[in-house]
Length: 328
Image 1 (cartoon, rainbow, N blue to C red):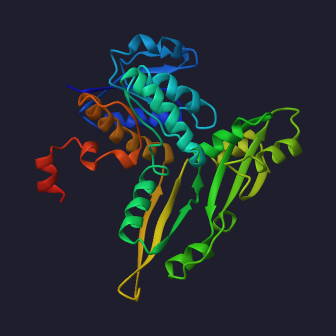
Image 2: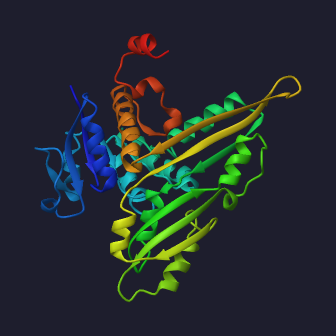
Image 3: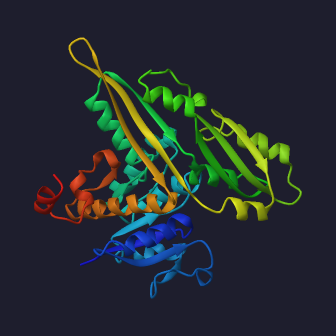
């Protein structure tokens, strides 16, 4: 029996989830929910209904896992607790500073409905988080370093677009080459947030919008831009479409550590990603964790989980015997 997948929100991430479902033959897309007029939404998958978000509750017994594809700024803090009462859910909430608060809200909701929720799934938080944990436990005497980019951050781009006066926008995260080289060379530098990355924004204004006000609001936005050197470029809608239509991203997780009786030996652990499509890769991670959510729910578990709580075998459609034979 296929795992029945629902998608809530059909933007870049929602389309990515649809593509990822196609690549996993133990899953089937069952329904897509949107805040738009459903008649205006055309899916890639034939025969799958598009419904209003207001109808989602009617599907609670027809969907095994609902993937929430909204933004972290305002959508997911409200939507994930709401729908975790009715469905097993996955989200990609990526405001790191607010994850503990989001976890508590979702955990209460999921337990009240007897459902499983896995939050903050993707590559950071997500795959990078796991690699930070593994590296920390393997090299306890060491330092962590995470670098993002160069690439488009969906969460930061979404935050820009929610600023009053902004019609559209893209944000690029750019790692400092000097800082990255210093870490790889084993120098163990002390780096501030501002020293590791810069942020570059390309913004299309609404007609009559105050550019100075928009720029000030972007640069002072807590959790997104306030701690970084941020440059804001105001460009035309045509230029945005022509030069900034792709959604590449990537990054690096490194830990520099010492072993030996006198800490005489040095080691570098490095995990890196280079992604043509940020939302499609994020969606592929999400779908693997949807399988885990389904399995946990089938075992009678409930409540909120993160990637730290999920055994790797739960992500794969292969049996334990197959995994031990083929991948160990």
